[in-house]
Image (cartoon, rainbow, N blue to C red; front, side, top):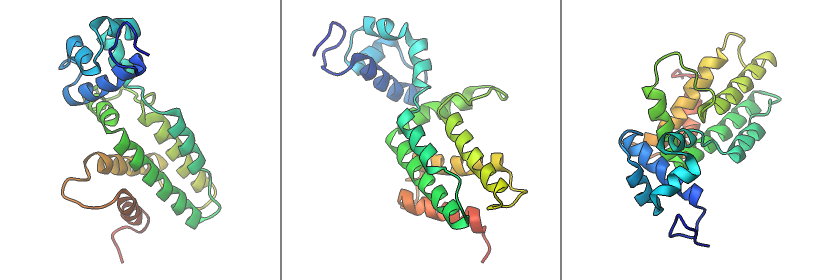
Amino acid sequence: MKNKFCDLDLNTRELIRKSAIDLFAKFGVKGVSIRELAKASKCNLAAISYYFGGKEKLYQECLHVLDEKFLTQVRGILILPKDKVEFEQRLSEFCLELSKYVTENSSAVRLIVNEINSIPPGIDIRKSFFGPILNLLESYIDGCKKNKIVRDELNAFLMSRMLFSVIVSNALYGHIGQNLSASDFARNALAIFFRGPYE
């Protein structure tokens, strides 16, 4: 059904948000005008103020794009394993699903990466897309330490961030110079994490 703000039959608020994510990811909040947002979403200027209270509030909402369905899926994957084999299987599944999610939502993730890169050191980003996922991954690794599946001296904070960064970076930029599928990349990355560079 058409409404007074938009020429399309889609949910106007969601249409504006999706268009804004793409534009903000490419040009930043300062590089996008309300007029450009309205044009990209095929809605009139008033719709942005009506639904979001202006460009800055729309931008803030775009930074909180973590899909609860995906977070629930991650919780289901990162259940404490019984042994090392299950530990590796669950991490492999996590890496593959994260890679798929980032690839499918690349504009939103790029937007968050750009925002993180622009904030001063020391500001906590745990409420963004990354925080809840990183917390689950770190807890998973910590639980495996407590259950003696991985080494006691393993730094769960560091390992979770390193693994997450590798998977997200590959999903966003991995097509440059390589021809690995997401599953091949996850498998190879985890082999390096688990076994190191040695034979």
